[in-house]
Each structure stands twice: as structure tokens, then as C-alpha cells.
Amino acid sequence: MKTVTTDIVIIGAGLAGLYTALNIDSKKRIDIIVKEDLSDTNSRLAQGGIAGELDINKDLIKGHFDDTLTAGCYINNKEAVKVLVEEASFNIKNLINLKVAFDKDSEGNLLLTREGGHSKNRILHAGGDSTGKGIMKALRDACSLRDNIHLHENTMALDLVFNKEQCSGVFALSKSNRVIKYLAKSTVIATGGIGNIYGSTTNSTSATGDGISIASRADVEIEDMEFIQFHPTAFYNKETMHRQKFLITEALRGEGAYLRNSEGERFMEKYDERLELAPRDVVSQAIYREMYDTWADNVYLDTTHMDKETLERRFPTIFKHLLQYGFKLGEDLIPVSPVQHFTIGGVKTDLHGKTSLSNLYACGECASSGVHGANRLASNSLLECIVFGNRIAQDINHKPDSIISNGTAYNKFPSRNYDFTPMKRKLGQIMDEYVGIVRSEEGLTFAIQEVDKLHLSLTQYPNKNKFYYEALNMVEAAILIIKGALHRTVSIGCHYRIN
Ligand code: SIN
Image (cartoon, rainbow, N blue to C red; front, side, top):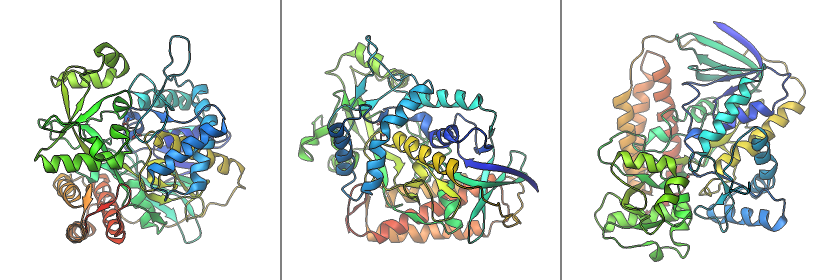
């Protein structure tokens, strides 16, 4: 088996992975492994923006702190939220130094927008509605200028190299099906969320819970997996049965769009005085109720009272995408429905991104830093990646060099490829039906029995290849979510139990 000895191995090349790498001392060797190519990350799909007060003003920062707590139903880790909002300014300015071109007005002032749960405009955006794309391009360019950063695309992390005391890297599978052992003094999991275990998600196809399941197999502490956030407004399109649904940013509601049910009624006043700008859990649950009451599969986003030219300029990606399907912003009602969007829980981390296993860190959506509580405030996710990515980098920069233990051998050899599509489809149906916006004791009990059967059949499957590991990670992540949902019997935030 080939062994690569390095200082740091980072699993995942989204915002959390690349930003962490760029803040690590350039004298240290970093290997970043990513299972697809660099373009396939969730970070790249982020539309709305990144929240944060650039002005270090106590009242402004307190406002961001309060909004984060209110959205999170006050079960957030307050210390982590304090870190998040206080270190936003430094890290967003760092992104600007890395040449991220946030949108500005004609006088050169940064433009700020608002999304659900924010009491004021504090969200920066790039390219109108392609913030993630803008940020990721700048970071990829910056990484390509750094000799100490080695990127390995099409390399799938399989399992951690670890013993009881510490993590010392990761076993990975190359494109040519060879197992490579990356031995590292520090390992960072930055693999994003679990979206594809649901039948419908806004996530990229690479979001299959890999990092969370890999950590869980090494007995690393995982928490709060039941908190799955549903985005209220994915484009509802009967013609495309793809798992990945097109996101329509909440910033559209921030700029004035309304929600209407299938009877044309604006309904949010029945649910929350913040109307369309209530936090995401409230809006998704309200839409679910409206769809149920009106026997409809979707509601509508209404922009017909807004200026068409402004909408086209401000939301160019969405404008173009909808046009392909015959819908025009500013003219037509846009069919939308809530779909899986974000994993709040994950690998439990402290204020420096450290997990329960020594030398193992986690960052971004796969981590549970405690900042989001029971429901994430819009546009705090990109912020979490940079604030905690920088903290992980500083911890690595300042810790004494450790001896890398050689860890275990790997005896699960890869063999021929088999596509687990039917199993993934079944998993998606179970998760959509029983572990969605509304959950019940009976539904969750049925779901765990069915997913346990899928898990059993996987553990008996002889071929350990990339697709096998992806399916295994998805099923194991689903089990963590269902068990968490069964265990938490009281509704809070985006975990809603009817019994
Ligand atoms: C959006 O633009 O609505 C999504 C941003 C986020 O998930 O915070």
C-alpha cells in the first residue's frame, strides 16, 4: 500500500477545507483529498451570501449574536456564537484580501442584504446570487499559488488511521482503486453535509455524509444529527426528478418577494409576525402546513410587484435558470417547495475545531460547533467555515509537533465497481417520508427498521469500492439522524415532532 507522510491531511475542498489550508503556516505540508473534482462542492452552490458585521461595533455584533440565538431557539453554544460573530470581521476582511470580489455600489461601498431571521442587512454577496462561486474561485486561485498545498482530486476518504489515543491520518481510495495511507500529524474533516440521503436536496451530489460517518466509525463523538434544516424555497419542477433541486435564495424574500399558497393567498401572517423573513424552520413548517391544507405539492414565490430589471441584475443566476423553464422573475409566480438544505449537527467540536479524538479536527457543515442551535440563521454557514477554519489553522500552527503513529493496516480491498442507485433511491424515499419536516414516533421507528436492513445488507456486501463506501456513509448518517430524532421527543427549531 502506498503511504504519503505529511503534516496535515484535509478531507474536503469546500470553503472550510481550502480556507483552513490557506491559514496554516506555509512551511507545513498539506494534502487535501477530495472525492470528485474541485467544482463539486456545496460551498460553490451558496447563493445568498455570508453574514457578518465588518464594523467592530459592540451593538452591531450583539445584534448578530442575538439573531443567531433567536433563530437557534436559544440552545446554541453561546461561547461558540460569540466567537462566530466577533471573528466575522477579521475573517471576511481576510477573504477580501484573498481577492473575493463582494458586490459594491457605484461608490465602492459593500452592498448588504438580509435574509430570514436577520433584524438588519448584514449579508455580503458576490456576483449577485453566486456568492459561493465567487469565494471558491478566489480560494482555489490562492491555493494554486501555494507550493505546500497538494490537491488530490478523485480521491475518496475511506476510514481514519487511528488508535485509542489519536488520529494519525486517513486511508483513501485513488481513482485507479488503489488504497493510499495518508499519515499526518493533524487531520481535518471538512466534507460538508448529508443532503443526498434525502430524495430532494439543494446540496451538491458529493454531500453524502462521508466525514460524519467516517468519524462515527472511529467512535468520535457525533451530536445533534436530528437537526436537519429544510430550505423553504427550492424551485419546484415536476419535469426534473433529479435529487438535486435548484435553490432560490432567501435573499429574494430579503429584497421583498412574498410567499403565496396555491389559492393565491399570502399566508405567512398566520404563522409569524416577521412574515416571509421569519427564520427558516418557521417558514418551512408554515409552507408544509399550507401545502397540506390546500392539497398542493408547492407554494409560490411572488416577485410580480418588484422591478424586473433590478431582479435580473441582482439575481442573474436564478433569473437565467428559471427562464429555461419558462418562468420570468418579476412576471410569473415561481413554484417552490421546501427541501433538505443543511446539516446542523455532526462531528462535535470545541472552540478550536478539535473533536473528541486527539489530532482530529472538523470544520464546516460536517462539524457541530454549536453555533446554530436548533436552526441555523441564514448565511451563517459560510461564516462558520472561515471563523472555525482559521481557529483550526491557528491551533495547528501553534501546537508542538507530534509523533505520527503508524496506525492500523487496511484489509478491506477494493474490487469491481457496482452502482448502489436503487439502494440510495430507497433511502431517499424513507428519509423524505418519515424523517422530513414533520416527524412522528411511528414513522421514525419504521424508518430505523428499514434503514437498519439496508445497513445489514451493505455490511454483507463483498466489494469495497468507492460506491460502496458512499452508500455505507449515507446509510450510517441516516441512522444517526433517525436515532437522534427518536431520542429528541420534544419539538424545537427544525426538529418538529407531532408525537
Ligand atoms: C440562501 O441563499 O437562501 C441560502 C443561504 C444559506 O443557506 O444560508
